[in-house]
Picture (cartoon, rainbow, N blue to C red):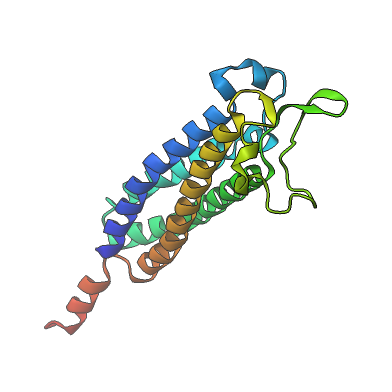
Length: 205
C-alpha cells in the first residue's frame, strides 16, 4: 500500500537528519571542542536547551523507528490501530522538530555568548545580539565575526554554521512529520483491507 511505502520513506529519511541535529547540538556545547566552556557556563543559552538532542534527535528517532516498523504491519485492523499511533508519533515529532527549529533560529539571530572587550573591560555576554543601532544584525556584517569576540576563537562562525545546519534540518523534519500526519490519517481511514473488502462485496455469493 502507498501509505506503508510513505511511512518507510519518511522513517528512513528522518534517521540521518536526527543524527545530524544531535551532532550539531553536541558541537554547539563544545566551542573549540573544549569542555571547559560548558562547565563554566560560557555556552550560548539556546545550545544548552539541547533541543537538537531531545527534540529533533531522540523524539524524532523514536518516531522514525515506529514509522519503519509500522510499514511492515499486516492485517486491516492491526494496520489501522498502528496508523492511529503514527498520527500521535507524527504530531510529537512535528512539535519537537518545530521547537528545535525555532530555538536554532533564535540562537542564530542573537549571536554567541563570548568574552568581549566592553567599556568596563573583558566581559562575558552576547555582544552581537540585535540592537536599535544594529537593526540588521551581525549576520549581515561579517566584519563583526572576527572583530568582537575574543574567546572562544571563531565562535561566531561556529554558531552560524551549526545553528544554521540544525535549524534547516529540524525544519525539514517538521515538514516531513507534518506530511506524515496526513499520510497516517489516510492509512487510518482506508487501511490495508479496504480494497480486499470491496472486492469480496461485489463478488459472487
